[in-house]
Length: 265
Image (cartoon, helix red, strand yellow):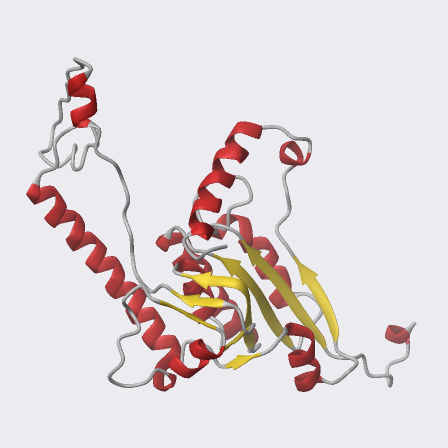
């Protein structure tokens, strides 16, 4: 009935967006721009919120999807004029930290793992194994780099050099994003871009986070005890809810667990 009485002021509302899991272009339950676009648009525009809170728990993943999500957050924040705060749960590492840095400030739990500002490429080499089995690798290309770092062929120095160059370019993009977003909060003369991670208060000391705290008390301190939380999360598709594509989901979960395992989680 409150909306029928114009002189009664509604309590402030905070839109809470949960962003949890591996960041990847595909895979069920993965974070990516397509999967998060609708909930982010609703969170910023529906119901005139006073602020948007991002609840992040991600070990990272695709640098492009991280960049797309971060860019969407910044665009919506600019268009609506809303402040954005990131609240880190277990981990905001690599691409997870990229998304957190899109917020205006970052709040961590005392045990949150933050950072891992770097780029990684992992593969395997099976050419010796298949040679022992008497298997001959046959590969034909048009374009000398089409078979770069083929795992079933011996590694080439020029391929490794090319890959390192690509990784360095991506790393520069990541560093520029963090430097732009964190600005003067980062200490001078300290290299925070080595892939290292920090925990809780240590992340605050390095300038990668702003405070130790939790969603409800922090938002109540800013907007009053009567603040309301409107929560948004990723929707699961109909097939996923009924257990379809189980194998694809299992493989995605294995990859996600491997990413979390890097941080002891």
